[in-house]
Amino acid sequence: MGADREGRGRRRPARVMAYAAGGVLVLAGCASMPDSGDLRGVESTPRQETQVRVFAVPPGEDAPPSEIVQGFLEALTSDDPHYKTARQYLTGEAAKEWRPEASATVLTDGPGAKPEAGGGGEDTGEISYMLTGTKVATVDAQQAYAPATGAYGRSVHLTQDSKRQWRIDALPQGVVIGESDFLRNYMSVSKYYFASNTDAAESKSQPTAVADPVYVRRRVDPMTQMVNSLLNGPTRWLGPVVRSSFPTGTALAKDAGALTPDDRNKLTIPLNHKAAGVGTNRCQEMAAQILFTLRNLSPAVDEVGLRAGGSELCSLTRGAADAAASRSSARHPDYLYFVDGKHRLVRIPTGNSGTDPDAAPGALGEGDTALRSAAVSRDEHTAAGVSLDGRSLYVGSLVSGGSLGEPLLRSQGRAEKDRLTTPSWDADDGLWVADRDPEHPRLLLFEEGKGDPVEVRMPHLDGRIQSVRVAADGVRIALVVEKGGKKTLLIGLIERDGKPGGKPAVSVVELRSATPELEQVTTMSWAGDSRLVVVGREHGGVEQMRYVQVDGSTPDVPAPAALTGVKEVTAAEDDQLPLVAYSVDGIVRLPSGEQWQKVTEGTAPVYPG
Image (cartoon, rainbow, N blue to C red; front, top):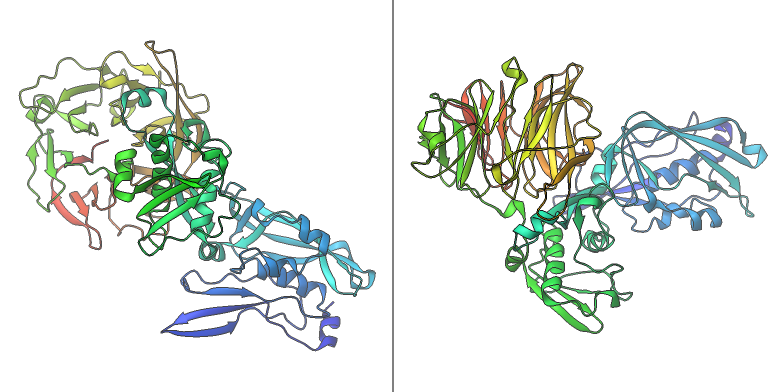
């Protein structure tokens, strides 16, 4: 094979990249085929070159099989919307059957390729190559991301066509791509559905929006991609606990074309006949789903108008969307809370940079019961506190002069570390807490923060819960679970069942890891609609603080500044508010664009939730 290439005496760039630098467009050949030697892997574009655009190059005449494979793999990293150039490396039949949208397999480095033993040769008119690498993640046909591990190995087969040109005639569905090229080509965007929880629907005048992150191609009309993805429904993981306001079968009208807002930033979306005739309230919920989904894309969309059957169904502005539906990141808490040196619940207003806390109103702030940790309801009317020994759970009103009463729950764990976790409030004033008693470990829910607890069923839990945080949407829950000396972060779905008026049956299902590379998670908190902040350590590594998405991917935002000796961290769903942590320096906070600042002495910081 090497001799054949040498005889041709030619070199060809497999792809061309454009760099935007100082207003000048610079073109550079990126990956040339060698004249001899083995076929190398596809080198991924360095991550920092965010303005790089890659243009695929079609196959050269009389290109050898190695160059066809190399060129095809390079073409998968391009910005070609429909992979037209990549299909030129395939036979006509293979080009028709290949579905690049079926999946994306992400490898640590670009895929390597080498001839398969017994896979033929150039003199036989057919040859096979094995694509290899180490898996990082997969993105399925629903554009849902999932971490992956292990070796990748798939075969491609080439043959000569009637013109004696080598082409690929058999290949795996989907695309395979290096990690840095994936991060350059794809971006994570959350689409939004509504919590289908029956109890939540009965207690709220607004539906609660739930984020469903997916990955779309960054430079291939992401606005249209996201609307199509939204209309196609939620990802399989989230689907059981959410609903869409779009009628079943709703899609873009056939003549919709690319979606672009007008000069007033209004986006008009033509839908098919399935959406015709919907009522105003439902139409506004549909428009709110779209506005929430598109809010971080460019160009900005300030208003959405929906059309079907030749007429406008409704129009909704960005400001009115928050009146049509509730979204957690739109909430702005009034106070940051923590436990001071006298083991009382205290608070600092979130709207200023003050460092002097005031006692929280009510019995938990008066100091009659020494606290180890606390949680405040999202409306900031009620607080829950765990006693200093971790044994007792109290609930009290945040009103001056309120009494505390008897504990709502007592743990029987013998050691403090085997008793109650820090509690967490959901969006409907439900109070969640885990009892770590080795003899009877359980996750409990107190409806409306009172009464007898509901023991939450967890059919697939493997380990003991060490920390609990319920998302503001009420249908997702984050848990730190310990097993065999390791502590991992799992995200699960909250399912509710039961007859109206009866005791609900509550389960946490579909648990999945959000940080598979961390073996010791110290603390975590929700930090947005689909993001968490986590403190943990990789095997053999040092402690680090990072953001993670609920799907296990890493968001394209800077990691928080390093901080020593972090024991607890809290974040608000509103990302304009600073991170707050309890470290060796006491209570510290991280304003946007600044370094960590000491606030005061204390422990157990929490924003409402």
